[in-house]
Length: 143
Image 1: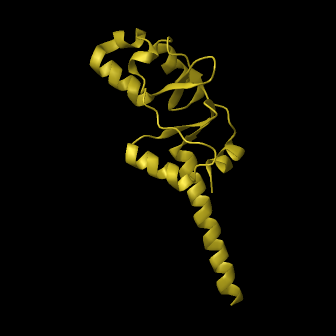
Image 2 (image 1 turned 90 degrees about the vertical axis):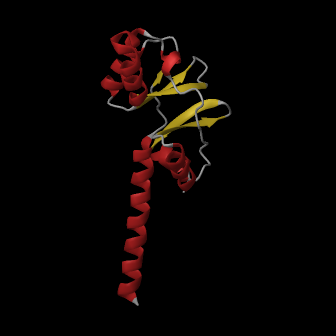
Image 3 (image 1 turned 90 degrees about the horizontal axis):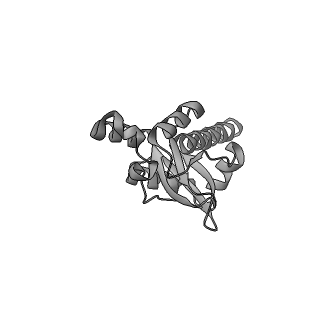
């Protein structure tokens, strides 16, 4: 199973923020959308970075409330691990585990094509295990 399968079910919409926006604006957007991360992008939809709730908390702890007026670009993760629609879900799971992050942007031809979260990966893994379980039960029942 690949990332394309996840995107076909959840959609390809990604909430983005521009690098010059403030952390306060980014925090408001995260709250409004009920999400945990924003892809930092320019108008051309290239991935410049990613900003998570954790990044904002760290900035506030280090710089106090004044950090909320800093630009997103100062506190985002600039070295973003990305995947493609053809990437296997198991590979994305491994990337997230090894890198200790919860969101992976999907990039095709240098442009943002979606976002996969750890929740998406876990949901699909559970569905696969449940399908295998049903198939085994049906096999045993007919044997």
